[in-house]
Image 1 (cartoon, rainbow, N blue to C red):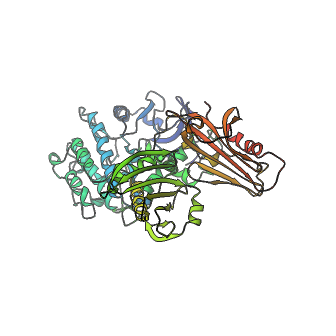
Image 2 (tube, rainbow, N blue to C red):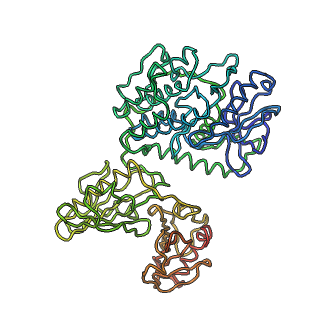
Image 3 (tube, rainbow, N blue to C red):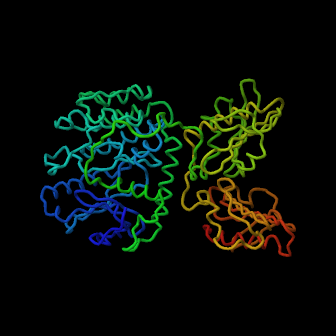
Length: 612
């Protein structure tokens, strides 16, 4: 990556050009930003090609193809100018890694990831073929991964079936031999079945880490499917039929992919990588455009450089490339779903009650109590087993995770390779915990209660079921509009000197997915976000209310050296509201009122939050 250079315009249409991502025989790919701040990838064509009639025809076809497939499974065109002295094309910026990049970094996919990939690619082909196109270059480098699923990019060599216009230019190599159908490799007339063959070849690479036909291509090789999971092997084998007429249609392929066992989800390592790209894209979009003399690449983090490279791949590729290796670098074994590897956003928006639903808890009996949430961090229910024995289950995200890890003894057992923690003695009320090993520190706790006997086996079994769901398909709540639940509380602390009443040394420490704690020599301050019944409806004992930062605050505790209160930020569903819970405890005697100290720390944070 380098500065855009003197021959690159500062502005193309409505888009400010930030830097040059890459270049090829036909032009440059640039990083731009629209007036509303959204990043775009811009393909800027060399001036000498603008007068070439053959190239002009191809470029117009490229734009037409991109405009015809702006669906949920492809990267759509944003804007273009063909008549300019240097024609250009702006495409949607997709902040996600390519499938090739993920395979290189993490290794081959698990069955759940293969199912999502197959469903997404089949859906993309339904969209592309409905537009009357053949993609002709479906390969791992032309598939971007997002949290919702894969997106297909690069329509630079797409063929419109109703037109016989030539698409190539002198010296160009069309398609990638390792993923070409036999008829494409032989230079025969193509149908949409050619893309289905390429989809099968992509799935082989994703499932085995091996390019199915090597550099020889399908005319001189045979795909080895022994390493493909048996549950999806038949689907892939059908795609790779030598006779195009024997291959399934994308709609048939979609039906077959949906019937593959398991949930269609990315494994944890992929979800974390996608979240890294998304977070970096947000930070990048907020940066001002660099000056001419300051290269964009200089000083960029490794992750930022990776994101910029992904933007280049998200643009329409300038030239087709040949694959020289027959294996994908990476791990020899398939990516496993466990242990739990939630992204920060997944941890903060986790739907705890959904983890106690029937699909997770059906093996433990019949429900005799409705799911009862206690804010966003806890939920409970009760079931009876075949012997009519009632067990009450309470699932919660315990905080802080470090305290759980330090205070709870190990049972000598593990859940998804994580130590199972909890008191060793049998009890009618038993708590069991695991602490996640990546991402936000997260302690997942299950309490089981029975009238008589030992509840610990029930707590352990239920926790295993919950962790199994978390590892494969964590249920998350959809956030509508600005919400506290997606925020990082520690990021809201003001920079600068430590507030009076806290004292050095102090630094914000994560306290669960929605909490942050500032501990110092003189005092301890904590803020926690939640969504629960409004204090006026909850029946909880309070000491009245007052105003903090012009917001209504209910005082929970006020004593020498101690202040706790709840501030209502904004209403949510029904009688619920998003709230910020404030807690301050002095470590040293002080003449100042504890609530005055708590307010002084809390108000700068509250000013950054939504208002009613």
